[in-house]
Image (cartoon, rainbow, N blue to C red):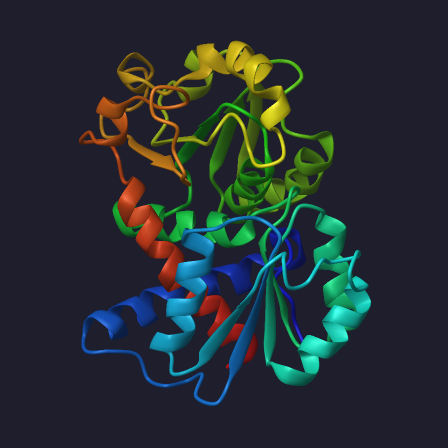
Length: 305
């Protein structure tokens, strides 16, 4: 049995397999509908955090594949509080064929995977967001027809999305640059995990303070919110420190003329990204959001199918 916790757990060949499968499932859906591969199967969706894309894309993915999904909110299961994570995992494994968890503490995902004898999918933790990163790779692949040797520049807070993106870029032989202020850099743990993968696949990783240096010649510019859930008390400080890292027209003009702009959403317009960029000709934000659905299908079929 395999889980989907972090991209460092999967081989490059396996991740290319997910890209190919997502392309196939997307084409199949748009050509009349997916086969009911998940008929008779149910996905448990455990949420500690609010969600739009993760909840809807996983639930719709299961339904379009002929299965079902059940949302379990924080008011129903207080992981580690009302009930131990181990007990929740073992109970859900009796009722369902897979568990997707969107949590704060990454250790909760690891503990669910330890105790559940069904596949566990990390729908987001404070450490990693692998489903988002793979949906992003699908979007880039569709746009450019390849992933190898493209340059992706991440600008802003070195958060969980950045941690999964650097791993994805490493697997697919991309050049990954990141620009963040001191105190908001991508963790050494994430960089160290990605480095040997990048070396094997001909990729490259560079870290900057200067966003202009990071985006020079970039094929993809990527940003995310400056204040993630659970960081609201730091809002004023984060806004002040990250203001120079806004993705605006002036910054986009420093990248390749055909560069695309990505954002995992929700976007705080006027902060990390401006309206004219988010809605402009470089933006692929909404095709990117759509591809969460098709990549989630691929992950579900690979693990549960």
